[in-house]
Image (cartoon, rainbow, N blue to C red; front, side):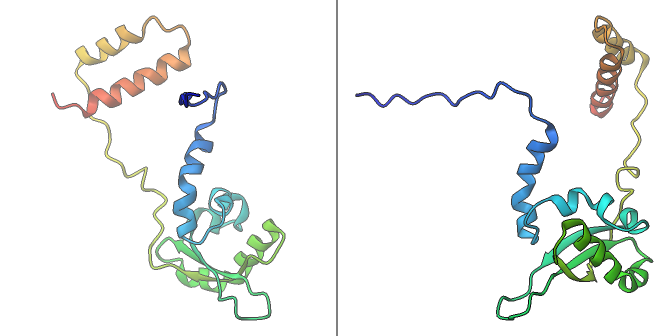
Length: 168
């Protein structure tokens, strides 16, 4: 009887990128105390109005199990500079919003993280440099056969981004 190894079975279905990335992020989130990525992924829905844009969960610290009474975890939040004092005062409201979303006592208290939150990091990225007209025309020539306008535009932007990084 031969023990022929079978090739891994192909998944003949499309998988969303968020599902693939999410499963890759799970081990990193578990090291930070998060049992699942729901709190981080849905923070914009969970958090009260000003805090969804100026704060982000950093980690959950669970209490020791030697206490008889149930006690929620400590949620450490990263917030933008200048909002720490207000966040300290609104901690119970944030904890209540998180517990309301999940339907059970998850967060007992909220504390500030030492790391500041910078939501505009993507906006501060360096601007793409201008390409010579020859390269722009070469990109248009390559993508001219594509009928779908949206796809053609996306590929042209990708080409400009890649060609812009290459050193001339």
